[in-house]
Every structure is written in C-alpha cells, then in structure tokens.
Image 1 (cartoon, rainbow, N blue to C red):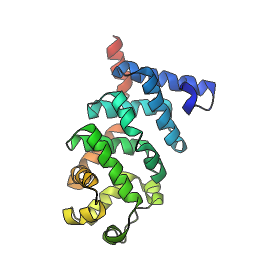
Image 2 (image 1 turned 180 degrees about the vertical axis):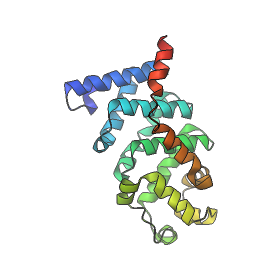
Image 3 (image 1 turned 120 degrees about the vertical axis):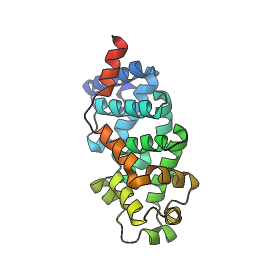
Length: 212
C-alpha cells in the first residue's frame, strides 16, 4: 500500500510521487515499485532516508545492474533487514550491489553474494575471527565508518590473499563477490559509491527524456 512506509497522508503522497516517477521511467509496475520504495524506507528509516533519494538510488541500481526495477525490488527483499541490522547505509548497499554486478555474473547472483558477505560479517567466529583479529568490523564500526571502508580495510589487512579471505568469507558465493568487488583495494566499490553520492539526479534526467 502507498502509506505502508509513510507516517502521514502527506508523506504517503510524497512516496507515491517518487514511486510513480521511478515506475514510469523504468517501465516498472507501479504497485511493485511503490512496495519496493516503501520497503527501503522502512528498513532505513533511522538514516533519514527520503523517498526521492530512495527512488534515485534504486534507479541507479536498476540502470547499472541492467535489470528491471521489479527484479531489483524482489531481489533486495532478502537483504534489506540484514543490511539495516548491521548499520549499512542504503547507498553503500546499492554501491555493493552495483559493484558485484559489474564484477561479473547476473544481478541475482550478485545479490546472493552480497547477502552472504553481510551474513559472514554478522557471524564472525573461529578461523574468521582469528584472521580479522585487531580489526573492528562490528555493527558500531559499520555505522560509524561505513561498510565500504570496513571491507576495504579487511582486504588491505589480508593483502588480497585469497586463502585468508576464504577463512573470513567461507561461503563460495560471498567469496566470489569479495574477490571481484575488493579487487584493487575495492576500487569498483568506492567508485560506485562516489557515483551514487555525486548529487546527480539521473532519475529526473531520464524521466525528462522519456516524456520529451
């Protein structure tokens, strides 16, 4: 429903407007797109995320991931709660998904890998704890510093050693994503995040071209 992520009727209209722009621009289903925007706003409410910003970032995930907005929405449902729990900012999660997609493989495969990475960070034990000894990868660190710096630090600490990385990211899906995304000290990940934070309103630009 339109008001699921809203705290007032006025906010519901803002969410609907942002969702409609995103749906029209991408050719997505309006109801599904609105549900996706609502889900993102609910998950990242504490970050002060607004509907227009959520729609802009979702547009970039779909555009750079070369997938429909409907697929973005259905795929992200599985990782929004965990990302929010770990204190990951929405822009960082989006940058992670974009970088994983660009590292190779399909979008759904990238989403699965990203979820496995987040799960690994939430459950560090045994050999992985030993490999990361002395590093702060806690929820508090991710909230304070950001997911991207934490992951880059892990990569730098382990020197890109695939055997050491496998001790931390034991799931084959997370390991493949980490190797691709953190190559060259996480260059693709930091670039994707910088692009999202550039201030460019690519959704409005694309909508203008579509309606011209």
